Amino acid sequence: GRSVLSVDDLSVEYRTDDGAVKAVRNVSLHIEPGETLGIAGESGSGKSTLALAILRYLEGNGRITGGTIEYDGRPVLDLSSRELRELRGNEIAHVPQDPNTALNPSMTVGDQISEVVRTHRDVSRSEAMEQTYEVLHEVNLPDPKTNASQYPHELSGGQQQRVLLAIALACQPKLLILDEPTTGLDVTTQAKILDLIDDLIEERDTSVLLITHNLGVINQIADRVGIMYAGEIMEVGATDEVFRSPTNPYTQGLLASLPQGEDRRLKPIPGQIGDLRTIPDGCVFADRCEFATDECREGSVEKVSVDGNPSHMTRCRRWKHAVANPIQADTQ
Ligand code: ATP
Ligand code: MG
Image (cartoon, rainbow, N blue to C red; front, side, top):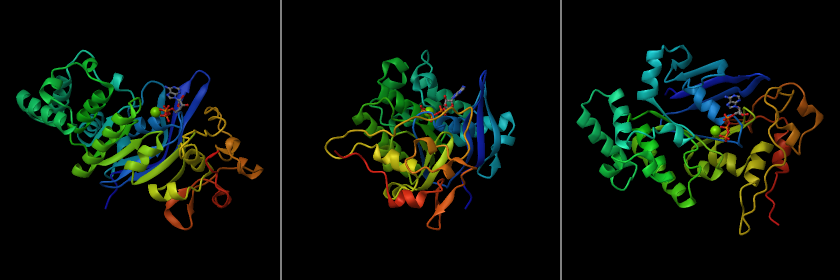
């Protein structure tokens, strides 16, 4: 079969007065039909930039500086603006990170959804509203007809998130890109939204790119996971495999920072992502890595396959050492 999405060697920069911020560098990934790929990594690692670039939603100072993006075998970077509009409406839906910018505060929820439906389907006003009630029902809003007549501010954060999902689903996309779909919600609402996404994926056989800094969310939903750091994918593989035997010191550090046991204390990785305008030689994580040697700060670090498994890749010269001495959560 053919991949739904295939990104190869993609690089993105933001131009600023102080130089170009190299937010995404040489990222390659693919998503197969019906598959969910999770992308995790701490704040500033380039997750949202990657999502925006895939749909060519970068604007202002952002631009793609290299690489290719193929959707269903078609080169996204070569599409005309008309083809791009169709792609965004009918094929790929994107739920952006900030629901406040995604919803129009001065339009009712129902009008917003039915407008999307009518942009992409040749249906009458009343048919579009019927379809709107259906999607609102699908995302488990309590009372679709009432909710359709409400304005976004009349809904709770979790309900707004459901409305965003409803808008994304209104066009029955083959690929759904979700950027932090549960951030800012309380734990109970988070769990409900996740179950909902899970059900929708199962029922519709949609492919999903799920972006989150929350590894628990990835663990629940993603078939495969890519771990991003400072604009690069540090490790990628089947979620259970990467979580069971992480090979990249950054992945190990992230997993060790998950709250463990009774005393759910976080053990964040010391330090922070460096200046993305000047990328040092060698591994981008070297400054924070307890396994790093001088050799790690030279040349460019290539991805290697883990134990000959072509679907589990890691970007670390010392991964065998890291596997033999894994970073552990602080359990004191
Ligand atoms: P978060 O988890 O906080 O959402 P992220 O992984 O989505 O983070 P991005 O939003 O993609 O990260 O940002 C990647 C890098 O690009 C960061 O260093 C950010 O400061 C920078 N950046 C993002 N947008 C711009 C912009 N318009 N101009 C300059 N730099 C930008
Ligand atoms: Mg983001």
